[in-house]
Image (cartoon, rainbow, N blue to C red; front, side, top):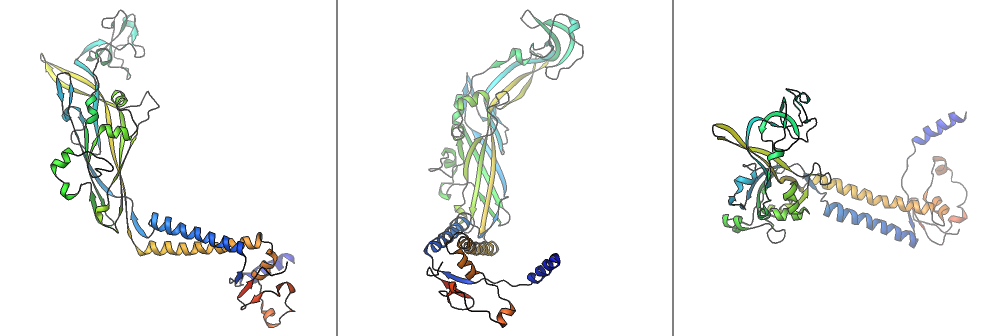
Length: 408
């Protein structure tokens, strides 16, 4: 019987209509809390949502971008003068470019047989049977011939291999770093396109300054030369908080981040990029940190093909472009405005909760705030008004004024 009654009450209650009742509570504490919460909500939406985040705009965060780079500068190595053809890889430029800062060179290598490096596993031997003919150690330098020979000018022996001889580990010559590289300049040309708004932009100085002479002489400075596309390697290393001398020794990978934040509601010329620089490779793991690459220069010597093997340490620069653009649109404006108005209404719910939970006269406030009106009550009014509500001045059946004079 009880379960059936609950179901009936739930079913009948489902069809009840609820409407808010306006009640003016003349309580200074509650009024201060209400206006303070309102001020916080309004300030948040006006300053952060509309002004800072520009929520009235339609935005695009996936622009199309093109990057062209070029390295300029010269350095002295002994009696040689090095230009960008010698130390820049790749030659054609792009969003990745590297500058060689230090070299380890192995001269006059030829195809032949020679002793394996003694640091390779199982390379040391005392007799020929210790070396397996035809075996290839992929951590080594070549294919074993099956002979055990003396390690160049030393007294111990290692297995003989077929490879480019002499091996790099034995014959390498380490050259000093290019200290002049700190003044090398990186030229960056970046184009960006926002297809949703058909807006194009590129790095360029003011029109009256956009001359070849200016581009050849200027150097980027965030405050003095924000449009100059030339960056000193020393400046890039400093902004990435790196020691340039250490970079010359071990090499490293530095990211050049270009960020476009364009407000298309104003003149497009005010859309200019900001730059940031950060080391990308892991420095703590000394075994794998840094950046280097190997390449060879081949030539004929006495009718035999020879090569010079170069292990180059340098700075690799990865140019990474991010961008976003925004333009006024009525749809996000309406959505943001409705959200703001709805959030202001939450202030009333919050203050109602305080009034009905923590105020001294919460029971009287609750009786005044929450009324249940049934058809029977309307047709047959009940007894006199309770004495605790005698000081409630009713403006209508929909609005009442509760003052601090309500007796406890």
